[in-house]
Structures are given as C-alpha cells and as structure tokens.
Amino acid sequence: MKDYLNRFRIQVVRLKPTDEAMIVHAFVKGMLPGPFSESLLRVYPKTFTEIRRRALAYIVADDRVTRKQGLVAPVRPRATTRPQSVRVHKEAVEKKGVEKPYERAPRGAHTRRDPPPKHNFRVELKELIAIPNIAAKLKVPAKTHRKMGPNKNAWCEFHQANGHQIRNCLALAHQIDELVKSGFLKDYL
Image (cartoon, rainbow, N blue to C red; front, side):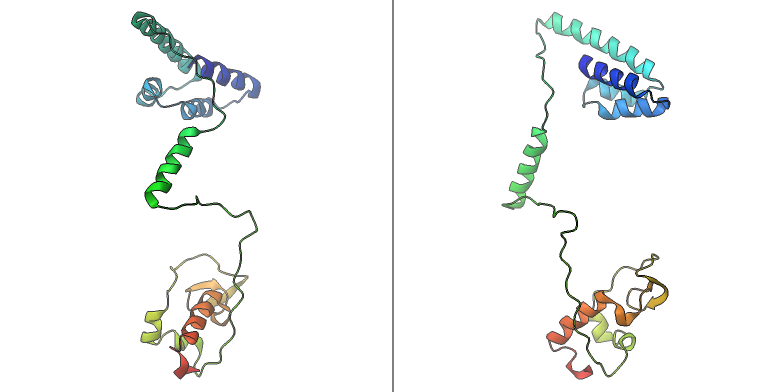
C-alpha cells in the first residue's frame, strides 16, 4: 500500500493534473482489491488529500495488526506480468476444450472474400428476396440507421439502409450465390 501510494503521488507531482476528480478516480481504479479499496468504494473520497489521510491511517492500523500477530508481511515485488490472467485463461481454455488460444490477426491482415459472380435472374433482386420461400433461406441483417456505403442516396432493400443499391449488396450476393450453387434458385435463373 505504501509503495502504491508513493508511486502514485510521484506521478501526480510529475504530471500536475488539474482535475481532482480524475486523480481520485485514477487512484481508486488502480487499487488492488482488498479492505482499503472496499472502504474507498463505500465512502468515495473527494480529494487526493483525503485519500492520503485515509491510506496513511490504514497503513498505520495494518502495521499494528501485523506486529500484534507477530507476523511480518512479506514484501512482494511488483510483477511485470500477470500470472493470474494467464491462469484464468488456461482454465477457460481447458473448460472449452480448445487446444490453441485465440490469436488476433495483425491489423490489416483480415482476408476478404472475393465478390461472388453476378447471376442473371428472370426477376429483379428486390422481387426475388420478397418471395417467401427464398426470404426464409436468407439471413437478413439487423436493421441499422447508419450509412452502409459511399452513396448516401442509394437504398438497399436487403439491409433496409442507405449507402448502396441492392444490385451492389455483397452480403446478399454471397447468400444468393450459395443458394444458386445448392440448386435452390435454378427455376429463377
């Protein structure tokens, strides 16, 4: 507790922040779970001076209890890694039965599917997706109010959103292509 308080105080002096509420929030957020952090959450401090006063009182009381018990609290060096996180992650992986943990792909390394081939249908695409048995096979995306492409005036009947026209809708094109490959739409080609 002493070490954390001193390191935090040094950072406050070095950075010279002006917002007292931000300093208090940063201190409370950085605390490890324990009796003192619980007391801070029960009675939230208003200033860093109040935190220092309460922390010093807590440190003195903790020292008295430790001396009374005849124990000397071991000094723990600050860990540079988080072994608890790794342990928790390993347990989660073991529960799921996954051999390899998830590895995030580097930024920009996401693979994009090639656009599907254009199919010539006897009816317009918006009429095709309105047919009940075809509509039941399509996974309709959630309705959104955001623009889904470069053309703000174009309307996609599949997405029910502006940004592109239905003939340029890749999400629909991929699903239609799968239905064509399965032979489901052979009557409409």
